[in-house]
Amino acid sequence: MLGPRRSPRILSKSKSLVSGSGAPKTSLLGNSSKAGALLKKAANKKKKDYSGASEASSNRSTISKGKTKSVAKNASKKSLASTTSTESNVTPNSNDDKETKLRKVVPVKYKVTKLANLNEGNFVAAAKEHLVRVDPKLGDFIRNCKVECRLTPSRGDSASCFEALAKSIIYQQLAGKAARAIYIKFLALFGLNPPPVPSATTDSSDNGTSSTSKNSGDGNWESEERIGFPSPAQVLTHTVETLRPAGLSVRKAEYILALASNFELGNLSDAKLLEMSDEEVSKSLTSIRGIGQWTVDMFLMFHLRRPNILPTLDLAVKKAMCQHFGVPFSKNSPKHDQLVELAKHWAPYRSIATWYMWQTQDTVTV
Image 1 (cartoon, one colour):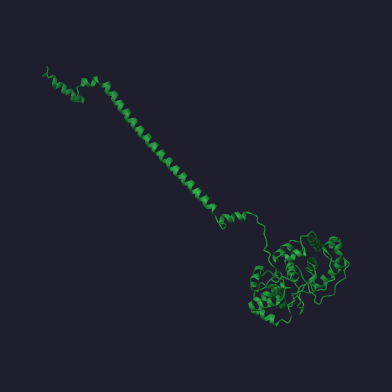
Image 2: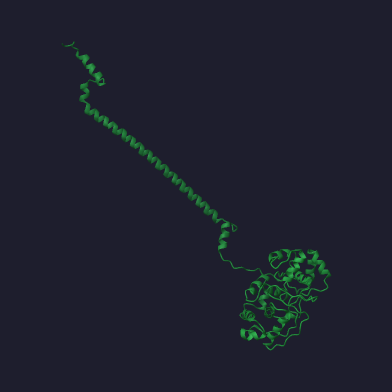
């Protein structure tokens, strides 16, 4: 049985509702290929727009990074330029400059000034006045000392530096009588007669020992009357074997020959030693085998007459200073630097103070 027949208008409207569009179905079907193409084109455009936006964003980021790097690079260049400019204006006292100087080997040069000498005028009197003022305890001893300081020109003053040093080597580590006997035999090798016996017998060594002679008060290791001494050239005509009959040990014979060689070659001379500072004399002489600091100190005091010598290796001086300053004494103490510190107020007359230290021990040195 057939239902009621609908009108064509109602049927068309119903189809439109089913298709979801206000347009008739026949119209949609007819234009489907065109609509598909439009949708595809729109999708491609949207994708392209998105891709372009992403690329633009990436390009902006790259440009931004490039600008950042460029700014950082320019800042680095400016900083480097600033540092270079600063370094070019570094003062000589900068740490970098100090390190550079430390890497360079700079030879040591001693400042040579006019050298004071105990032979000058009233030098000893001025020294005693200074010591009395700066050290009242030593001043009392100086005023009561019955022996006048003899660190002044004496009969042995005309001896050459070579003679004084060679004699000191002969006397090293020997008692006075034994040393003098060898000294006489040494002179005899060169046809020289022995000098008269000195008034005081003393002994010395380069390890800092010194003998005691009651009330002699001489303090001059060149107090013997001179009769001459062989020159360096004459000594070099001998060998160790021909020097040994004088009683010299092999080492002492070698030491004397080495000393003679330095004088003969011109490394040392009276004129050079007189012009050297105390430090230069010490450096030059201790480089020679057989000459130690004690020998140098005695040479500076009694031959070159230098006024500010403190022989800290002399045991008698060391013991006297310990008693004077109330410091414990032992073989290994006080050390050199401690003794120098104790005696700093004696400067610039430490040689005179040393001479009075020997007097407190009733000691003289050869």
